[in-house]
Length: 205
Image 1 (cartoon, rainbow, N blue to C red):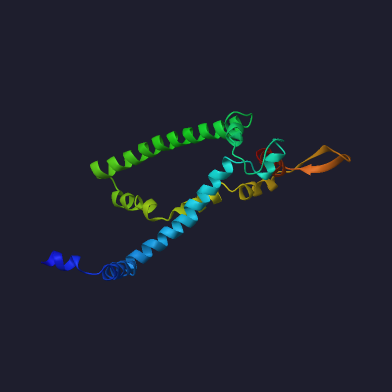
Image 2 (cartoon, rainbow, N blue to C red):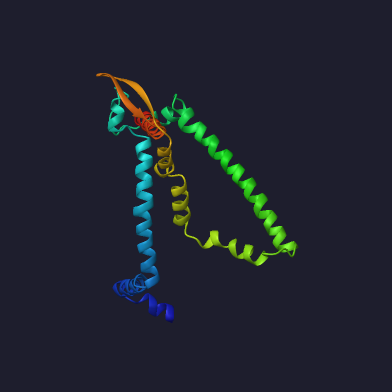
């Protein structure tokens, strides 16, 4: 009898009941927060990632100077060929990749050696300072990632590290320019910055 009664309910009433259930589900604070986070993730992660990938497989405006037959927006594998097979591949891809692999393996071995030794000494021995070491071991987990990134950035900041070079007496050199030979002061800091700008110019062009 109940099934017969339900089957006799008009379609409009069924639709209204489903809409009310959907609205109750949609008005749930958890659902609202989840939808907001999904939208933010799509806008801040998926869209930039799509644009980044799209620029790697299409010609850009600056590629017209490198490839005369290039059309802006046309599909191409030029960027991948240039990075993997050209003369730029070794200094800008393979060498950094090898350095990254070497550093990651070395850091892993070093971390396992130091961490494993400290863990064994804290658990299997009664050495002094076990409690302090156990408490300090938790710090990397509770520190925000940007804090450690800022620390490494400050440590490797070229400008700050080269500021001490001013204590070294600069040498005078003659540099040929288009308008003739001009006498300028070249310090180690200036040389380093010039090399970085040259590398940046090579990457762009």
